[in-house]
Length: 344
Image (tube, rainbow, N blue to C red; front, side, top):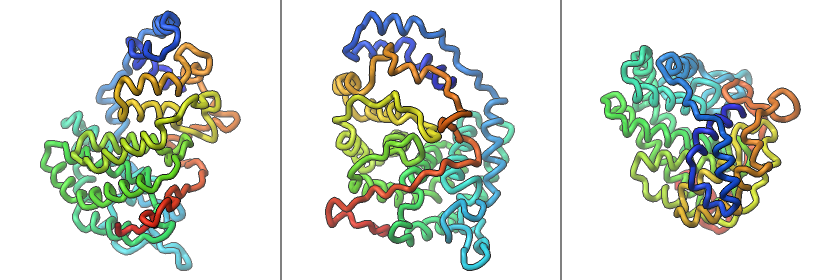
């Protein structure tokens, strides 16, 4: 949480809109003055190379058996056997699991877009060339569209959201390699966008854990994509679903965070999402009842270090140890239209 404390300093220093929280303005001003002077962390080539090292080191290493659903990479009839020609018919077979391969690719693309002369640019372009051929993406699309029943929830919504973020980065990269990869990825992105709209239509209640399936976290990733690529249908679905599911929320339980290895704050993720879908006036009123004032004791946990050793406060982000959390099926059939069919 020390990192979060620094982020708070950067975000809150000068955040005069907090005065709209309807609380004690003098206390808010005093609290903002008490924050340390924000110092943006260094971001030079050393940091960029460090960020690129993990994706480059894992993209070509297949998932271990048992780390991903059967049939994507490993066959489970008897002794696990990797599928034939997986490197030609799968694009995201590396790293720890499917969504890790997707967001690792996103990281590499983001880095080379920001710094085209980065020392590992040739290696990034090589990964893009080997993983983003038409047969690779055709294989991905064929796998996903054939999933049935509960299996159709594979990597939904978190993985879908990251795939769309990745497509947005490629689509807006003014580079021949990026445009070629975006064209190849487009059919899968289009299909996942359509499926995400249907998923939101069927969503009766949100997932509020501070882990991958958190509804507001994933919807925020999707809005990152719609900010880059014109996808009005998905943007509208996110806005309408956010207002439907969270518009009447109040008194978020900040005192209960974090639990069970959370790597994201459910309260802050929801507050961040609603700030993107509500008008400033409506958001100020909503935030006033949703979060305690920034100077309140109930808010100070976000500025404190977390004991990551004892109890359940484990942060497994960036490690090979994934939190053991049940998969939630959130399409509860509110009408006959919401019987899940992956072909829709």
